Figure 1 (cartoon, rainbow, N blue to C red):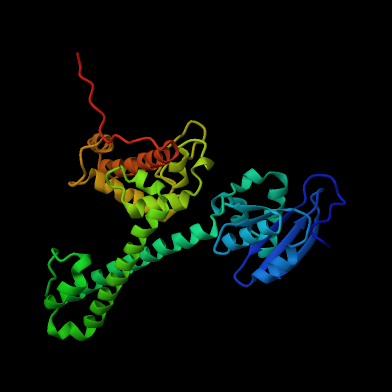
Figure 2 (cartoon, rainbow, N blue to C red):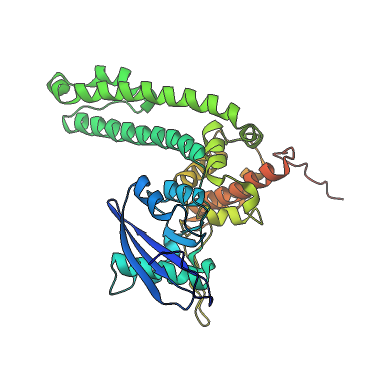
Length: 355
């Protein structure tokens, strides 16, 4: 049966797609809530286009994932309304004791038909934005790999009774650490040191790309008015947020990056919980890194630093950690506000004199 069947006027026809690496389970629910089609589509652009191109515009729901970007692009080109569901809001899907691909596709279709807001749909990025994000995410993978290799070499040398001085940082490790490696370990760690040198060169190439990319995104320069926010953090923030006007309030951005406390209120209980850690973990990590700099020994005297320092002095064991998160949360809100208003930023407002 064609998925664009409009013979039933009650409600809205909706389609749910459960996407796997090789196939897509498709379920069509008509205006009366009846399943009128179940089918499988190969997970290939040409197969998806052949299935949906030329059909009457229909609401289609799929879960955010590896394939959701190009699929949403293709389906929108075919004229359909596409809802990319937030996986964190699909508890009914994952807690279903009869979970299967067919069941998941039907669940998505039924929710999309009744109330799309329950899917908490996310805004798919443009292909160009995703390509630029892929570059900085690739850089991050190389940085993490290099860090793991450096830790490995330090550990191996320590096991043999040696020690590589902590003054040799990660950036220069590949060149300077070799002289500290015992001869007996050279066959084991020599190739790793060479790999570290190669990774460092490739990371430098990515960093040169970042410097060039910020020229294509002039809004990043405005965000770099804040100490601790450099080209990488500002670029990642701009690319990930996409359209700043999709947030009604700047403080919503903190929730988008998972920097607000979780809540589990029930009856008279409202316990203090950790942050939600929802959304983009990479940008959240960059914001936390910026917060560490702001509160660290090299951070200048600013309102953000004073705010965090005051929180850190509250005395309990986790005060410093909570202060870092609070500064990162405030930083996310501030970055969005600066982006929207394009206002100049004063890092330290004048202290009012008391009478």
